[in-house]
Image (cartoon, rainbow, N blue to C red; front, side, top):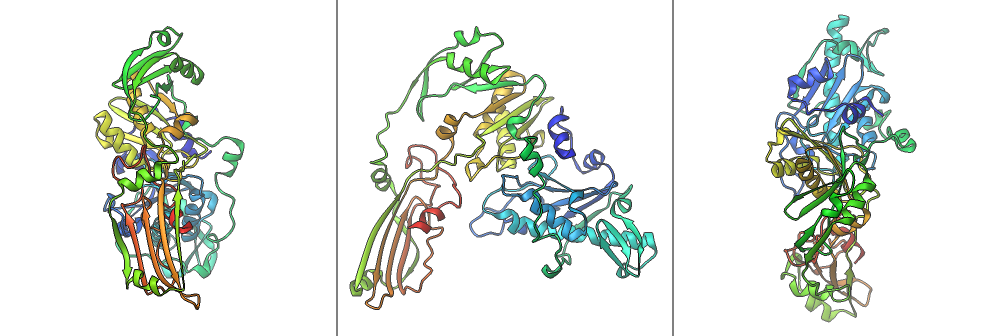
Length: 513
């Protein structure tokens, strides 16, 4: 496990004040590279809300006195290997050894703001930021080495964490030695000169994932592995159906159990115990009755239910007259596809550990959106965002389901009631019940084909999946692509339970149809 992970998961007893001055104190002397490249983090991607990333920097790295290099990003490691790929980018542009680089990901106190880990945007948008930050750092190091070695920067080169004199390779100085005792801030206001792909020696090469050993040996830390002094395990008394309301409650049996506490905040009722099994036994002993709305749809009638509530179709791509072209077609195919609800079912269920102390909150969370989680916790606890820290350890899968953070809010609320750190890990049953689902969808397609086998008409209507992935990729002069609603962001009341993003939202439904 890296020194950072040990620090974050074993030694954090208080949430530190981490402005830039404190940051330098926390991590020692070194070169800090700041860059201002907001648009490269995906804010300019069509259809995406502009982010709230700081204008003065969006990504930065630190080169410490001992030569170690730390990269910081608000992205999370969900299993795709970004810990390794981002480190490769830094190593490539810096000319530094891979084993000298540690990535800090998804820590809201140490990392720059990020909208979240989704949309395959880490490599596409954060990658260029990291490369340019590293290129700028390398330029700074060469300028410092020129002063140290008394040689013009043009006569220097870099390799394996050293700057050397090109004409005398034996004359060299280590990155760490150049950083010693200095805290140099450089704001990048133009693109740095980055290496050409033909010169790559690290990127594009096989490299053992940096967390492989930790994951294979079981040393890797996930939110459920976090332990805090005095921590209690929580289980929530859940209603039998969505939209239920509590009518009566008897917690006496649970509260009589040794070491068990029961806390309540409205309809949130939780049993707390020193062990997970103790909490499970205690919550099973709670007697609660709930009022529930009778479900009026089932797996057979759900599609008719959805279509009856679907908004009018809005054309997204329209040309010519598909209906008239269909009349001239030699053959017409009319098909309907129905796609059911699909769970994310990650290996790791929604989990969080929350700790409140000194008017501040620290949460270790299984999340794709640590900064959103921070803001949610701040709101529910009545704290400022600066007084809440979310640390994102390894995340055991998300697939879009961990973009929302209900377990984080629940853990924070229970920790406030309990006055102690709280560990909340959803059961598999809770995961399937409370996590959002890919929305059920209906796609209706009519296509006309000429006698020569050419597509001459295309009429495509999709409900509840949006139009992502529905683009007409053939030359069809008479076509129409229309959508009922905006995909998984359906109007309230359309679906009988929560829906959300699921692995390239909408594209999975449309590409198949």
